[in-house]
Image 1 (cartoon, rainbow, N blue to C red):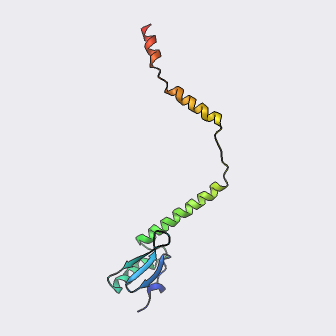
Image 2 (image 1 turned 45 degrees about the vertical axis):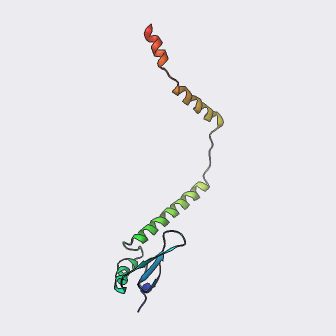
Image 3 (image 1 turned 180 degrees about the vertical axis):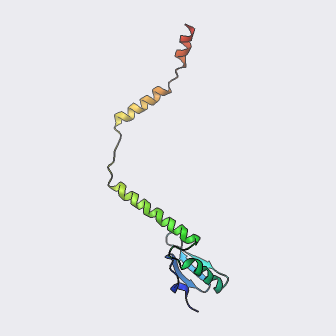
Length: 118
């Protein structure tokens, strides 16, 4: 029985044994086993999904590609922010904003009532 690993191009494939495929798991440091009812079913799966570098229409491969895309994006953002200047709001501005908020919240209805009596 010839190993399917010579045909597999998916980067998440780990190994094959009997009627099982072991692929990288979604959680770091884990792997997932997919068991097939027969060798024929395993070969069919490999021919439709695993022989493509992008994983074809394999749900696991799509999710793993998305996981690594998100990780790379976060790393890129962290790298950009590492060298970005930081700004802090001066205390006097923080105080002025709080006072302005309090002034806006004061009721104005009393003045209208007094002027309407006149």
